[in-house]
Length: 466
Ligand SMILES: Cc1cc2nc3c(=O)[nH]c(=O)nc-3n(C[C@H](O)[C@H](O)[C@H](O)COP(=O)(O)OP(=O)(O)OC[C@H]3O[C@@H](n4cnc5c(N)ncnc54)[C@H](O)[C@@H]3O)c2cc1C
Image (tube, rainbow, N blue to C red; front, side, top):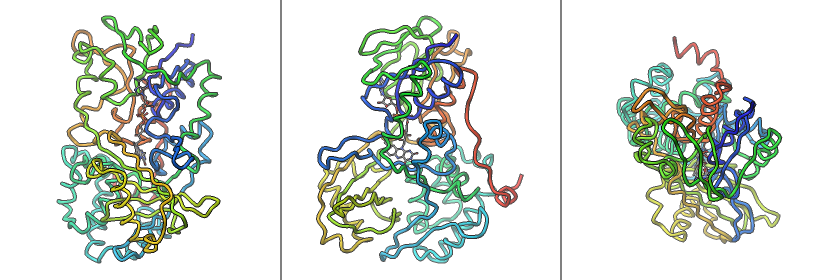
């Protein structure tokens, strides 16, 4: 007999959970408050430019195997373009090219690092030493740093302010959405150990070639064919329980009986749906109000002509960290997209002030910018873009499934938790969200689970020791 599994939220965690619920022979019913799928990784119709814009450029890496698995299931993996070359803007406007060389991983970037004009010889040897330490540390070794920030580790590795600002910050702040002095060391180390050291493909950058929203189009028919459905525009207002177990959900369309519920809501949203006594009783729900958030700013610009020839730029030591070239329209006007992670300092600025600062940074790469006209500008502030992945919050991230041990007989049976903030071992990313969805479906159905990680290259395995 197949069960109805009610999934609250149609972001990546919800879609991932739905796919594995289907594999197990059950029927997913997604309740999504908005009229579109994708949650924080989606697109909107922009009336100013009359185009579809992503809320923000979303980047994945080769090591995001679960996200790629989801795209594969949706039949959209072909819509991801892979880039193995990164372009770094120097202080004097020169561009350093980071491209894998002929040496095998983890030495594949060493040639590019040696040629980088942005960094002096001392900085490069500091970075090499730190990378070597990271490699030797391995996954188990990073747990020794579970109570520290990545900044603490950089201190111990004697990385200077210069090396931090020009090398570590651009990588870590954009990957973890927190600066080095705040982010849990384990997350920053994981990004470096899993993306940049084990193999060439692990560090490749994937960019969707279609609007994010379109990636989820196939989900509707997959879910329908499996006997499930997606209820857009349906807001869940509360979850109801008896003494042991979930009994139902109340939506804006009325109450529904439900004995299997997967919540994929962010912690602050979930907290609003749960009665106080269950927050006190269920060990997974006690810390919902302790999660803090970190903002991201995305700025779309349509310029009257092409000013940037590179597909993207990393802008170390500047206000914006990444600039993406989204191509030219039929009039030769170029769409640029600037991204600022951990954007606290930008949140109180109005759009004009934001655009002015962004243009300043772009001018460092394209001096002719001052002669160009901005046709449209659109700044998208996401104040609660991701939870703040600090070392303090890490132990409070909940497991997917209920435990029967605990106060008054344990956690709420039938309630499963997913979302990028749950315990996945990853910071708040699309990969983390998909992992959480797969883990929740696994906990509920006893089937499926995570897909394999990318294997490390032979030399990387040998150098990283036992
Ligand atoms: C600006 C920005 C840039 C980012 N860049 C990257 C990047 O480059 N790479 C990367 O890997 N990650 C990036 N992320 C993070 C990534 O988008 C998230 O980690 C991921 O999308 C979270 O998915 P989720 O399903 O856990 O949560 P969400 O996407 O938040 O999904 C939750 C869903 O629940 C719905 N909902 C809320 N309340 C209710 C309710 N009461 N009833 C029903 N539905 C409800 C919401 O509308 C939403 O669709 C970025 C995030 C932002 C905001």
